[in-house]
Image (cartoon, rainbow, N blue to C red):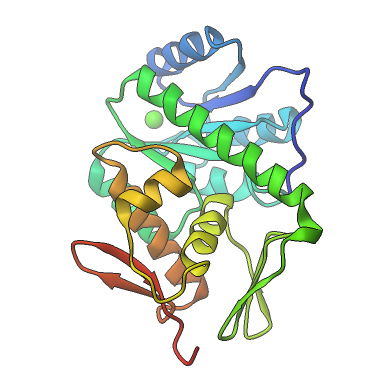
Length: 238
Ligand code: CA
């Protein structure tokens, strides 16, 4: 699990973006929040900077020279689950990434407002903070066991039929939220509020994308879609 960041230090954000105008605008806006911002303008230097800086959040463009955002995301999350907000050019690109279960925590389609990016970054930081606090209360949290799925909230680990499954922090939080009330339909709006701490018009697709990623990693038979409403955790045989 990622350690909580030192209370005294500023939030460190790594922006991996090859369009100088966007990178500069993001850096300017985030620096105004009191955050320390570094920019990398291609994939390989983004991976290197992530390893050197140990950032609290990475804002990651998809189309990058050298290595694309998908590969950068995989590499920077190899050692620890770094929170990632991915910038895409089109909505259908977001859908594609989500289908692949790339492991970003949130997606924003260009053009986006800097204000919204900052709000979503803050929401992501709050979630990471909350997850760290929960991990510190570890002994008080029993594992959730539903069918052959075991969710260890203390270690933030998930296994199915004894096989460990690696989830991003957001995927984990979504799974726990669903699994705490098995066979209960939770609306997308409620999931957004509880898991993402953030509500906006485009947010429900973020929920859909993370459900797709959970199905890809844990199997298609755990989470039921209730069309037009939301999702329910209903493992087969449980
Ligand atoms: Ca680009």
